[in-house]
Image (tube, rainbow, N blue to C red):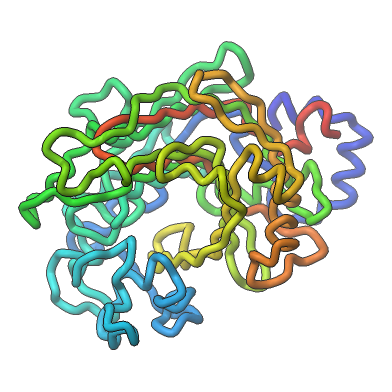
Length: 412
């Protein structure tokens, strides 16, 4: 245990152990406060390259074998071959994740998919600090991600490198010392100006939406859930962290990219997401902390959507029911939960987000497809993200002092 955990009063610690000590795994963030700062890509090295094909599996409840029916999901059922078109005449694979038959690559069939969706030019695998089996997991995805315009497979679309690395890349990541708090800082960014949107395979500019996240996930570097949520709320389901916007350049359209970029398509957002599962369905709950342009959802209510991710190699398999919230007035109005917006000024904000109460709000508003159980539910992971739409501009986010609130002074 780290220093923050050792400060837990002995009586409280014994009570917790008596109540929950039978659990086989840890119930917190393994690298609390980013003490070690080891990081690894979600997909293992080499997956999706050459004859080490990406494993795409269709054994779920949806009509085409994805988790959800393709017609019900904004992501459709990507990579799915050999299936009749939907009633509206569109292919079952056609959605935000896949725009071309065979993902724009080889149309040779392999099982339920094509080689073009299973094998990519490279796997831009990241491993920092000798991660071993203890690490923060990284997702570097560029939508449409089932697409040969990306060098790598879904979830590892492009190279990730430090902010000062050459050649420059759209996805940036650094682990920095943290003089103002325990541990280190995770600083990551999306820089749209450092992406070449021209696709040699199609000989034209192609629109895409880069997404980068980093977090702690059970069975992907964390040896158990990061906490346990309860609809009544609990420090065991509350994640505390410091965050600030570390850099920002206005999102815009780069000269020459007008064919894929317009003022009405520009935006960026950043925040935190977490995983919990009940009734056999993963629930992916997003809390937007900052947003602008078309990715600023602060004026609307919480929402729900269905997301398919048939990549068995990924911790995100097979997808999830997405529950979406926006910090500030939206969460206060619709949920009675006070979560501050993250300002562009670079001010550091201390957060304590009780995901049990957030999920209870989704349940009360009838967003979740299955009622939230009354008892405890494992919080399988927590991740911080940035997503951008445009061809110029950037946003950087710093996260530090991360822990499950149960182990933090003032909560126990």
